[in-house]
Length: 79
Length: 240
Image 1: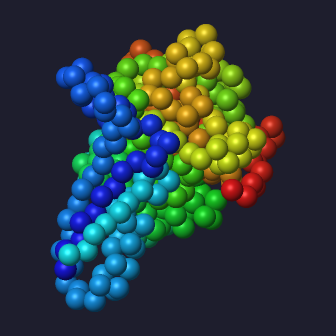
Image 2: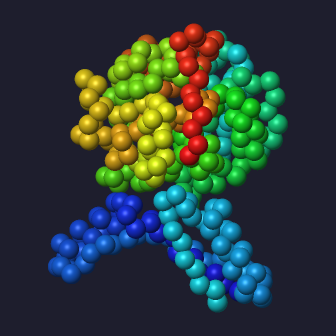
Image 3: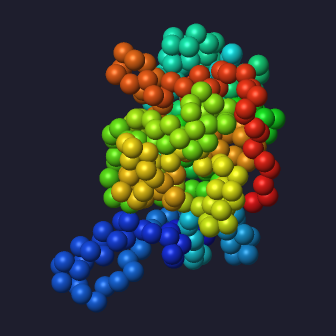
């Protein structure tokens, strides 16, 4: 099973990289762009067939290491 | 005193800290490789600056799981003095020994320059050799020093005098213009509620000798060597 994990800064927390990209897009003429958020994308192969168990594992990984939940939020898909 | 300086893969200010305690202040220093799990007979521990584990994932995120960190947590829990400088501060945050988290500098730049920092609380084990309100010239060198915490924790830290160092103008005014990295409330250094764990982004070890042209940082280390003074009140315990 493969977990695809996205980690981004929580809404409401300033994302300076997102802001810089937003400004760059604006200067390129993409005038309808807003709220750009930059994050991390991780893929993790799991030797686990049970989706419920895999999900519990991925959640624990995110909480313990992959995201700092003080400032970041995460979401994942299992395939 | 016996000081332990932890060495993570990627630490690069470890020998500067060793030099200050050993050669400048004449103390016994033990360099502690991050794989150690037993820390015996130490009076204080320093987590030095650098780029532990290449700053992969987040600054300090992987170092906090180093074998030595269990022992550092135990040491702190028993009231031992722990000083985290720069990357050391980031590790203390990730390890939960101090509240909050670091974000990328607002400017996105790695900033390496002298800044002015105000000693807001001179009644701690790390700042007792300073005067309250004293302004220090001290270098910073980081890309992730934009301190963040939730409003409830911030209010609790403010009420409890846990914000020990703030970025300010050379005249001592704490204002947004003097904030190099976007740090919440101009925070440059904080202490835990128990008063034994301090994290600071500026590098006192880089300005602790007159021969370097600046020794404003020396009294951080001198403070740690001082026995408890009568005027030093232990910080209150505040539930966060």
